[in-house]
Image (cartoon, rainbow, N blue to C red; front, side, top):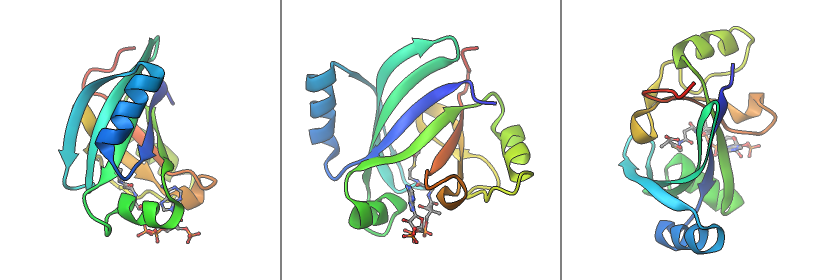
Length: 142
Ligand code: MC0
């Protein structure tokens, strides 16, 4: 079902400071920056590697306010890994299949994600404490 690890989402207080850290420490490059009002984040995607299943990124996410999902996460747990995003060929199909196994879906239908992707989240309580995201890229590299 999974084509690749699309991205690791990392929650931070200061996006610009974290971008600078990832650039200077690991030599990563920012390939996209967006504000996603629906998700309550300002985010940047940094290219990590291209593989047979597509491209992998680090996604740095800063909350737009303390009441957002990432704002609450930061207040409770502090900075760190917030979610894992897996690449899938068809997010609607994947949701059907995973939902059919009794896993709680945060999103019943796909939403708008980074770089034009269709995304959906699975509830962390049903995935061993890991907030899990399904990502269908606009043109998946297969
Ligand atoms: C919350 N919990 C998590 C978690 N966030 N556990 C693991 N990883 C996370 N990231 C746990 C809390 O610790 C708590 O457990 C329980 O889930 C309920 O959390 P809450 O803080 O009371 O908040 P809720 O229930 O209102 O919401 C939790 C939920 C929410 C996962 C449903 O955060 C959500 O809808 N997330 C999906 C959307 C999202 O995260 N968007 C931002 C990234 P305890 O044991 O303490 O009760 S957007 C993004 O990344 C886009 C732009 C993209 O990739 O393209």
